[in-house]
Length: 199
Length: 401
Image (tube, rainbow over all chains, first blue to last red):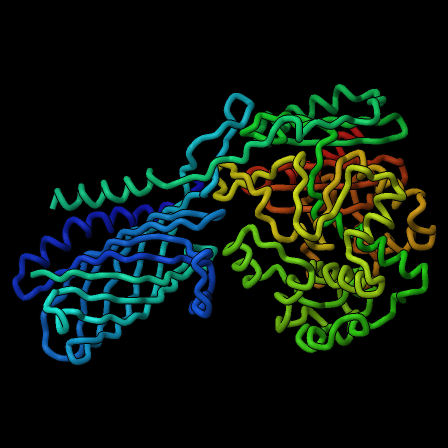
């Protein structure tokens, strides 16, 4: 009874969405799909913190895989639905695995550069980075911590460069700053990603 | 659809179960070697030890306790000082005393009063740099005595920005000058000198002021003025963040699920004069007797001032009233360094300390000359319940029933 049940229900919903969304969306020809791989740098802090100075020694590394689907439409404004699975490791603190819905609003300029906004809602499970102990027959012994569930609301702002215009390859490189909450802490992601589009 | 569902589920759970964990520190048993100087003379020694063993069996990693009453002396321990290296907790092991450090800092300040180098009514602004005074609410109006008795109204630095900074870099050390920066720009609790509200910032500032007046670092002040005169040979304060090899490890139930992680090296306020001293139960007894009874570090007037409560009201009157069935009923108030409790066995004076992964208690009943000191090397979840029960009931029961 220690963990809140609500984040776990959200996880089940998200897993079902993972199963349903790609199939239903890709079945329609007017939809474009993309798969992205992002490298993450996580920090505990308020939005826009940790952006001023980049210190390679203070990177808390992680990665995310995102499956995204959007309807092809003319004009600057684009909307896509996405589901993301990710992991980060924050030394001496916590590591987390998450699954999140991350719809993306993009404004594409000259089919080359985009400015995008990404709200999100996810499920995260956090674990300590050090060993854990619990009592067994009157003595504490080491074992694998079962962690804690969290809701993971997030919001991100980023820019992308669509390489299709330059190279003909359907790739987009993007950078994004995201803020998210794993109660009781506020966190940020700075991410660099590469996205591959396909029909 | 079924394939996608299974794939997503598989990826998610593979990530969950492939997470890394750091290895626990390998500490040689020799580092924990120590001896207890005094033999137990208390007739209830066996009962005390049974009590400790029962508390540990109930889910605490380790517990160390010292009792001195007119009937005799006893110190004992149970559980583990270091779980992965399988080191049994011994009465001679060191612990962080947490906020009991504030009593040491109060002693330093009273010594400076005795020497005429500081006055209780001095404005603290005289001893702080102008930039800090400008940005720290109430710093212009608070006095030294306001800091001592928590009536300054200066905001607590343990707020969200500090918590985020500490979580971002758990091994970062926060000296007092750094800690008080987290209180800048926060609203004052109340006008200085009108109410009482506990704030760690008060004692971080007192530490800075003591250093400024003497020109010496806090670690030197404690050593020369308290540790050495009292023969506290196993007590120290390292403002550079050193952790003694033989200190009991600190365990924290981060997720409130009965699962503890080692947080010994991840507490940055151990460099603060509001909470950074490391000691043993035996050394704490020396200090307690010097403060509560008689000793070379303070004159009688200063000892009295430490415990005479301010008559100012609490800003949060309900915050220090405990349960109706608790043996410790309420906090009667703050003196210029000590807290007075109302208990079912009369008033007790002393202080509590708490860190992530640690709890420390030092309480004395002057009417019956009974003194107890104990350390728990755990916090969070049910460990908090246990330490609360020990403080509010068990320590009175074990001494008086």
